[in-house]
Image 1 (cartoon, rainbow, N blue to C red):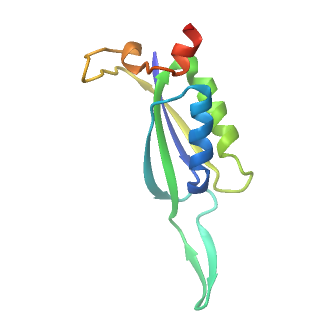
Image 2: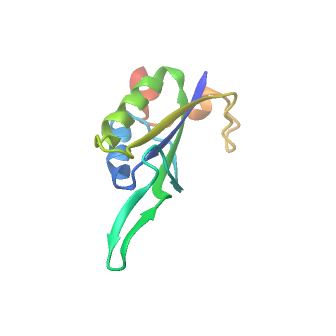
Amino acid sequence: MLKKIEAIIREDKVNDVMEALSEVGIMGLNMFEVRGRGRQGGVKLVGRAGTYQVNMLPKIQVNIVLSDRNLDTAIETILNSAHTGDPGDGLIFVYPVEEAIRVRTRERGQDAMVYAGDIDSRKRG
């Protein structure tokens, strides 16, 4: 079965997360700039005009679809590379994916998700 990871992380951790995922063989992903707030409810900033509250903070959403056998590796990699220990490190959501179809080749399911040099091809070789 395929799974989708949706990770919301700090902007300054994007390169660390991408490098770490690449090292373990997670190749295909999408990223989006998003804004949101979590438990901390935003941050207070001090400027020349005084103190003000910023409620919606910039974050990056990383989306990855992969086989469930690689799920734990991907999650651990994101957790380790995105962690600072400070509030606002982010969240990871996991969803089931019913189907994946590569448009160019019409491959379906796991076959559609395999890339040369990715985590699955490394495990086979």
